Each structure stands twice: as C-alpha cells, then as structure tokens.
Length: 135
Image (cartoon, rainbow, N blue to C red; front, side, top):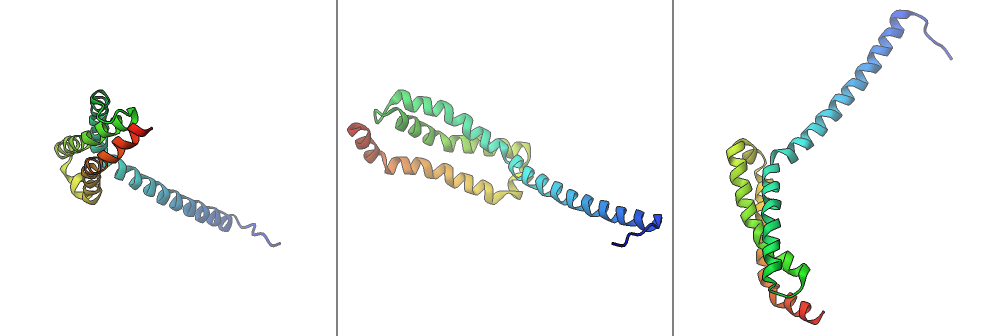
C-alpha cells in the first residue's frame, strides 16, 4: 500500500475530509432545525386545544350523557376541541401571523380535525349510548 509522506498533500486530504463531514453535519442540522420549526411554529394552537379539552372532558364526565366514563370523557373533549382550536388560532395570529400563513395547510388540517370530532360524536351518539348500556 502506498502512502504519501508529503505534509502538504496529507494536510489537504485531512481538510477535504473535515469539510465533507462539516457539510453533512450542517445539512443534518438544517434538516433538524426545519422540522423543529414546523412543529414549533404552531405550538400555540396545540396547547390551546389541549387546554380546552381538559375542562371540557371533565364537564362531559359530570354530565354523563351515555353512562360510560370513557365515552363521556371523549364526548366532552371532542366538543371542547373546536373552542380550543379557535382560541389557539387567535393566540397564534396575535403572536405571529406569518407562521399561520407559512403553515396554512397544517392549520387547516387542524381545523378540519377539530370540526370533525364533534360531528363524529353527534353521528355516533345513539350507537355509543347503546354500547355503554349493554356493556
């Protein structure tokens, strides 16, 4: 095996290897940073949705429309979700309206999800009430 003993050539090889590693590392760091920003940019909507669901779930459990504890909690949380979404969206718009525009498809998907759960709850109420009564 041939090895080069010229210090200039050996130094160049080490520099090229370090540069290649540094570029890959910078690329990976950029990718991680982008993923973190996408989640971080709309965090207020998520927080408001969860915060609204907790008391709504407790109200659902106290109202006990079906008689089954888990289903009652689910109904309460489902009906609290749109309120949390609207509150989170308003909070996000006040804090940084550009993030809502930049991630508008993400925010629209959250809004559709927040609207779909109560609709699903209304459509399945009779079925779940019968399941709770039978079980």
